[in-house]
Image 1 (tube, rainbow, N blue to C red):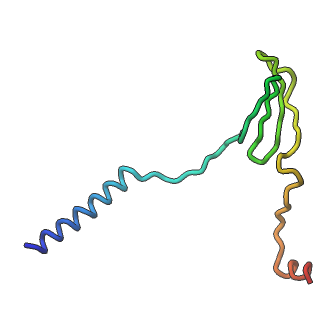
Image 2 (image 1 turned 30 degrees about the horizontal axis):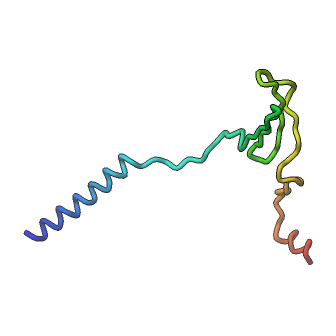
Image 3 (image 1 turned 60 degrees about the horizontal axis):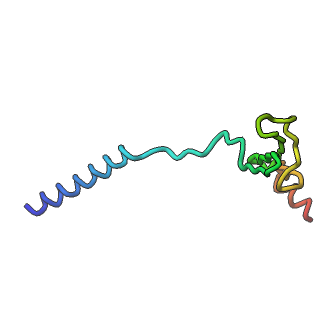
Amino acid sequence: MQRARAFFFVCAGVFLLAAAYHLGATSATAQQGASVSGIGWDNGGKFAIVTPNGDVFVRQSDGTNWTGGAQYLGNFWGGNPVPAANSTWGQLKARYR
């Protein structure tokens, strides 16, 4: 009788684990399509927007309307992007030889 009871508890545990996974499991997804990482403004009506790659844009407002287009101020991180060219192991050894 004890073995039947233990077998029942094992089966019930596996069933409840499968049911909990079925009811609550979701796929992990990344955030996509974000075009603005940050925003800031001052009392004079200037709005600054930072994109995910660090580009900073500023636009002026008079309180009700936008006055002019967005102006690119530069990249927050500064500098140029690092080139991502593939190198072979031999090219890498020759460069640092």
